[in-house]
Image 1 (cartoon, rainbow, N blue to C red):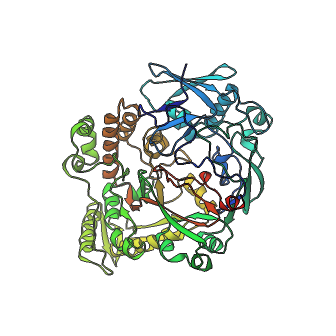
Image 2: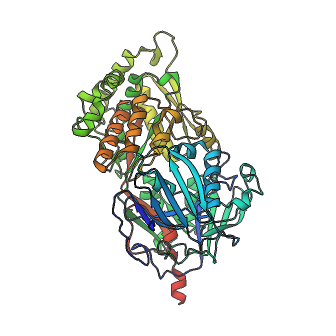
Length: 582
């Protein structure tokens, strides 16, 4: 026999019988409509393929085998699967499907559906294929049991990430070509179904009142609204004004300036719109200007380091972001995985295995702590920034560049140092223009090109850019996803998130070490080693992070008293006006 939960940390908070997660309100009323917003457009209801722009909210249509709690770092609990058996030697996992589990059309969910989901999703999307690379095969044992065998027994994360597998209906997609069902309303395995949509304008989901899992402890208190509506807007400034006029009910604010100054009007004055900061303990990941090393211009590490030294974070934080942010010193900021100082202990032992390769890559990995340059944030060219730019100028000279008529040119080819940053956000545009101003002092011309969301998404999938402002989020338990963030296989794999085109055999080996780490101490050491090597490659000009979610909402929205430390979810909210009616 297995169990109804799984954890990578060896301990789960809700191991015994429980009625609901602590942060959920089991007495939340059901009913009402929650109106959200999205930017751009959509042209597909299939969230698994690389084709098209996916509609917002599709994650609510398909349930997973297991579900994660938001108040512990790496535990999952029974959902479609109510029994989990992990082999003693970690060579396989068996999921037992809850016999009560049904699709929205009343058809039972079986092991055949799970196998079909795994085979179909990994076949159609190389990102999923790489994520589940260490899974050998899916074997149906009987109607309600499926076995996943593994290529290795060192990847401790596999049972957990298989628990994240979304289950799609085999009987439905066998009648409709999976790859050609872009706007076909799907049969649901989750709490909501697609009710209606108008391409590029809105999509509406209706709660499945016959949802079989509605009373399961991990689900209790969630999915309270009868309908979820996503209204689409051309850009975020239009969306903000729509929110302030009451066109939709809540928004997550990503722009510091807007949070500080943009929320004005009757809704605010009358106390009908509330602004809250929800503190969290999530790793910050990396937000920054990602440099596309597939471009010959950026092959030289010295060039990338020069771009790194030209960014004046302190000025931007003070003048653009009202000092709301902290500079990112790591790919794993705000977590135990962030490297610091000089490598030591187990991390140094790991790096020493690749010393010859790493000294050729960047010998400072062993001799110098990685330090993010600072400035005094002066409105003009302050002393700190001047020194940073002098150092950047020195690096560019070593890389073969000279200044001629205020332009930086390649001494051999006579080509000017010009490139374009591709953006889809006005928030990033302000930051990019400030960055371009400082690059201009070095003789570098950085053009800023802002495109619509659809064009941006397609170009990013194809790596058709010189530089982008991107974000790579990190989990509480780094693992398989590192392959398509930084691994060589993902460098030219369309749709991967290896935005910088990193292809380095040592980084590949460190990722393997992260995935196969036998214990927490080893995992931390491998991630720190990976972080350090990535940092010294100067693939990204780091920006900043915040430690709170900025949420604005109209007073009809009810929220639980407890805010979980590892995320927030509107699925926990409810319509407060229904409580008043009672």
